[in-house]
Image (tube, rainbow, N blue to C red; front, side, top):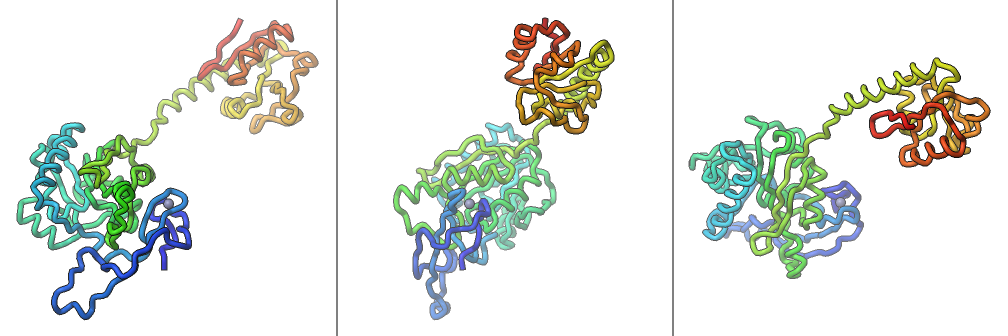
Length: 379
Ligand SMILES: [Zn+2]
């Protein structure tokens, strides 16, 4: 039975697979021994593509060891040289000397050595007890575990992270990355690498599909995954002869709304002062423009001194402003029921409104225009 929804975006997957392979190995690691042959049989792989985000993925049950990293990469001299340079560049680019970097899915931890060589203080996370034990005998710092959305790691939050050829195994890559995010400081940089699905497409490598790899990322779907999970992507490019995709990311910093409170305080005070000065004198004041911005500001400033709001849109006339309840009237109100001051809150139309007021309606009272976060009295 196919998994009902996309691992990345949650949209229901199509009913039919885009591609299938019949009678292929059940896992990349399940090499049968002499006594297992009678039990060994093939399995069918169903490859789906999400119609919404485009992620190509296998539906169905993950291999039983999906949390564990099993790699022979540490045995290739060329690969180690590539990783050594990658670690050096990562540490140098983000000034990670003596910083604690978490490698998620580190296996026995050969990449931890390269990060340490580059000057960082690496810590590994690995689910396989035997890999953790072997890594520790080599002097590496490795915690045993697996990240899920609510996981809190001992020793966190970390100042950077790396994840190499690991996300493609995860049944819930969004949950894993969200869990990772919560164990990082804000803005923490990260290095993420996965096999490139572009490479599979370019070379028609249909035999690259294996039950161990549940997701097949292109640059687009890798970016979507990372952005959806709390990271900003700095760059994403093909590496290792085009076989892999490597992304550099930051844990996203939340927007800074602290200065907005100050801006609101100042503008509301200015509006209140203008209403105090002009609301009680003579014929009082009106506002031109019943836009949503004006209605919000009038409510925030509790602008009960405003006698009415002028708006040219007939469907607004005869109604009232929310919260403060000033009547909304057509421009003829300025003739029928004159005021001594007008605040223009008409955004991009403010200049035109001022011209109409001064030239067409020969308004001689005080005119103030809301520009940005200030009221400007115009001549
Ligand atoms: Zn999707």
